[in-house]
Length: 106
Image (cartoon, rainbow, N blue to C red):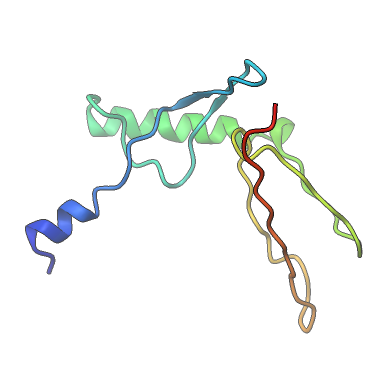
């Protein structure tokens, strides 16, 4: 069982549902499995909207799935893209990823 202070630490962060990219001027949904509710909305209605937005965001027309080949490099805008690693390789193959984060490009 958690104490009150432990529960308070588990509250999580508050994020907007829509993000604005100041560089491109485009808006994007900021929804995924981390979203649990919409502030000031009744819980059932908020969760229903979140589910609808998540279903919209992962509709086939918005999904890119990369067919990996040796030496591939994939770059995405982390401010407006959801990404998910899929275990689509057989053992003893391994997934090797190097991550580089760049901030402040104009």
